[in-house]
Image (cartoon, rainbow, N blue to C red; front, top):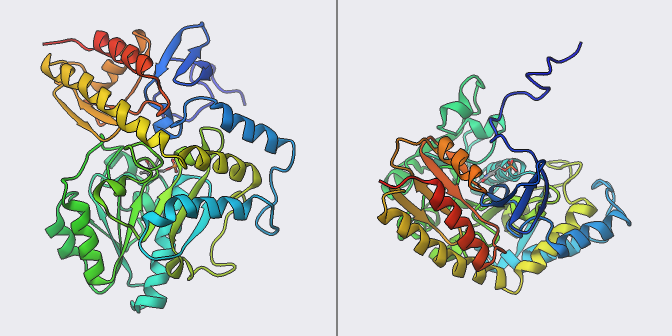
Length: 402
Ligand SMILES: *Cc1c(COP(=O)(O)O)cnc(C)c1O
């Protein structure tokens, strides 16, 4: 049976901007008619190092000519180096002295791995009665698209029609320590949070929130799981956004930028005594930790190891903040939230977020709306000062002033 050409063969679970991209380099992408755009979405932070970063592409090319997949039934020569490098980068930022890594592919898988690990730890170490474990999460969260993960989403689009849902989650308001404390009881194994809620529109909690959450977790013997799939690996100007508040999570999920915009690479990194509950056969992935993923992941970790990328994100982020202040003064934007080189802009109307993105596209800059009247900016962390200025000039042209 043929597919009606007008509708196309893709299911309609996305409504992309009407642009067809054919190439990219750094902060730039080119469409099928040769038009050049500055990419201020950067694959939702999967492209923190821009399109086709030379060191990452070289690592991938070299590995493609050597070995691409073994499955975890066998070892390969980059698996342990990748895990060690990730522990070297992130381990010192976590609670506990020793860290371990579970390599996975997508972000949702890393979150699922965290949920499973926290539950098993709860039963075997904390002593929670069988099948009674609860995990406290925040309203407005985005942790992925699996049936378990959408079970604790409060976004009607993400949830409706996909039940029955997985039990064992308690949703409390974000940035509300008292509500969180009330939701924690003797069945609670973990608190799972984004240190900054990216999908919601780059919502940054108040200064004392995460430290207070850490205290609640410590007092109740509960794991703090930070989902840093979008906020981590340089985006906020730090390796982990949690560093901003001096908070050490017990487990952290990483993804997106870990694959350098080339292959999906995710990981759960956490306290060795917690990840120690995983034994052969209890969890796994056919592609997790494959040689190509490890080669690219190692090159990504190498880029982050000097701190230059994080410093660049802070510096460019400050410049972005100044330009966004101007947009706020002129009334083109209602409110601005920012963390490093990451910002959420609420529009005053009457333009919807979508319409603003279409106008920005016409002006040569690609951005993405979220939740109606909000635009999220996440330029590649490698964007130059001039390119960032150029992008903001274009965005300013696209947004009407009041
Ligand atoms: C993108 C994202 C995920 C899900 O990652 P996928 O690779 O799309 O499965 C989970 N958590 C956060 C915070 C994210 O931004």
